[in-house]
Image (cartoon, rainbow, N blue to C red; front, side):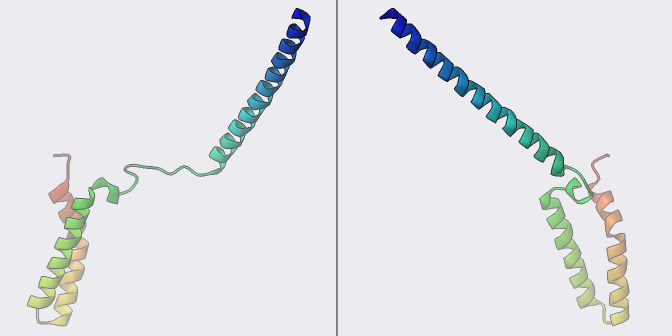
Length: 107
């Protein structure tokens, strides 16, 4: 009776060892595949990568709204079309300086 139990236990342990080896192979294969994919796919940089992410969404919206308001004021108050265009182009050229002076966090 004990020999039969020992044989069954040995068979169970052998089966469990075989399953464990298969599971480890599958995990290793999956890890190699993920590492390969990770090397092939370019990484997405999060955070401050360019000039726009330097400001919050609310600050950017405020910049856009105030710029559009200034353009609307120029368009409604200045009668000459050539002068309107010159003032709007000048505003758009000077806008980065105004933004840096108004919102710079280094000071």
